[in-house]
Amino acid sequence: MSRIVNIAIGQLGPIARADSRQQVVKRLCDLMREAHACGSHLIVYPELALTTFFPRWYMESDEEINSFFEREMPSAATQPLFDLSRELGVGFYLGYAELASEQGKAVRYNTSILVNRQGEIVGKYRKVHLPGHREHEPWRRFQHLEKRYFTPGNHFGVTHAFGGKIGMAICNDRRWAETYRVMGLQGVEMVLIGYNTPVHNAPAPQHDDLSLFHNQLSMQAGAYQNGTWVVGVAKAGMEEGVDGIGGSCIIAPSGEVLANCITKGDEVAIARCDLDFCEVYKRTTFNFDAHRQPQAYGMIVERRGEMLMADGSGVVS
Ligand code: CDV
Image (tube, rainbow, N blue to C red; front, side, top):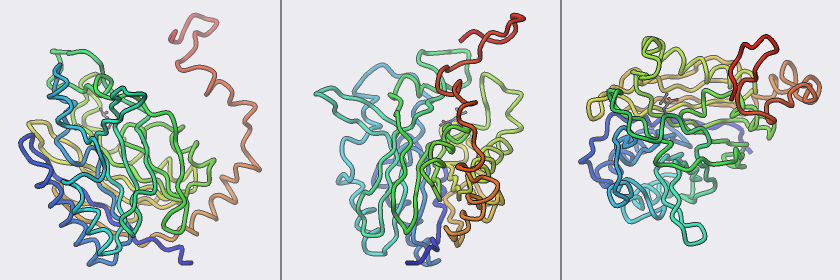
């Protein structure tokens, strides 16, 4: 079986609050057709790719909040994307807001799915690292209320698909070494990541100029240190008054960027990815079995925050 996966970035430009699911799905279908014309097997769309990035607004009404969520997948509105996937033989990663029902209770997740070339869902991931805050913080230029609107997921899994081991993460997850390493320990060969990242970081505006650098730095480190391909895909541009970074790219296990978008609008960029290229990293520098020292890493799972040092420095979590 071929170990080459032709990957397409399906970067989106802004989605307005007033845009319907049907309008957005049409844009996703257009990108899929373009990816297919370029010979792609799999197209990767951004985080929360069916609506505007609604956590920028403080809302209290369940009805209003739930209007941004999907109760089923596929739904009537998203079925055309699944139909096109089957027709063209192009799989996809799609981020969306999921309204799940657990023991009769509604639970909201920031979710992504992996769909194979037959248009079937073969993997689901729920965002683990939810950034931002829970309550209204009027001092910010815009809100980032992911902690209010979503429950965190608790698992980084890997799916056997596209001839290899495929992992998923969502936006803020890409900044955390643990995200990649937990999947690296499952032999991941390609990590798919959709994101919405405002250029302006309210708690640390001095980082604004470094937004694109930090985006690429995190994904390149994750790729190299785990010998895996990484595909990062933005929803970019000026959306409802908030500027989002672009910088969508495909990174090889060497840490090198193989392809990237050059706009902040709807754009396809492609790369031919050989999953066997992971092997030389996984069997040498990052041969986990030969070189990792897990007995020295206990703190990673024993505690969440930095510990207070004997001299009183550090942070008490
Ligand atoms: N959607 C995100 O998770 N965004 C965060 C921002 C808030 C920093 C990110 O890590 O890109």
